[in-house]
Image (cartoon, rainbow over all chains, first blue to last red; front, side, top):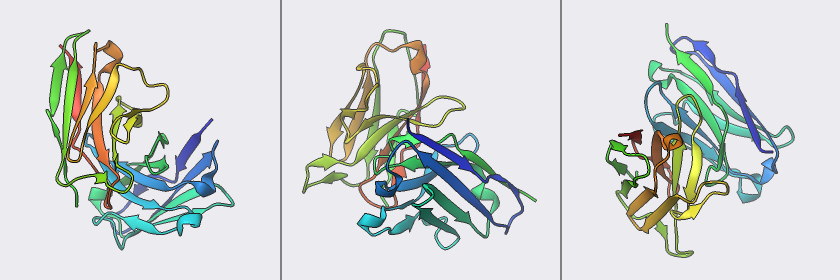
Amino acid sequence: EVQLVESGGGLVKPGGSLRLSCAASGFTFSNAYMSWVRQAPGKGLEWVGRIKSKTDGGATDCAAPVKGRFTISRDDSKNTLYLQLNSLKTEDTAVYYCTKGLIQDFWGQGTLVTVSS
Amino acid sequence: DIVMTQSPDSQAVSLGERATINCKSSQSVLYSSNNRNYLTWYQQKPGQPPKLLIYWASTRESGVPDRFSGSGSGTDFTLTITSLQAEDVAVYYCHQYYSSPYTFGQGTKLEIK
């Protein structure tokens, strides 16, 4: 059974940092493209970024609003995806989901990040 | 960036009737080398993560009821729910994964009339 479990969310002040984790199981994590998608309260879905599998080069790509502030990485030995969030802004407040695969066929339950003074 | 525009923003349909949601992309999401449209549809119920319904624009995900179908190619796509059930009340999103940044439609809220 596929499982994606996000953790690391919480309340942080503007300008602060957080690291989110996504623990994966039930599939061959090392072969999978993985992504982060966020959803601000009461709003729609926003793609944050993606990391390819290492066999496909392991490249990362992020959306413009987070480029230079957020970093996606993976540890295939731990079956874990990460999202490092730096220089956080109030508009980064959202539930952050990790998703599996190019077609994002499975989503975790999400972790809430609240940026507020 | 590819802009995804859904219509309508919300829709009320009677139980047992057909619901149709449209999605238009600002440029084609059809990859000519494999003739695949890089377009998915998701269903999101309150308090839950999105659930994949359709990928490659028209392939139903395993376990999704066959009353859900996807169609279209290039820039114009449709999600059709035949015979609407009460459990289909949700927000539906289209999403392109053709080119980065991958983008979502704004969502269509489907309710029972």
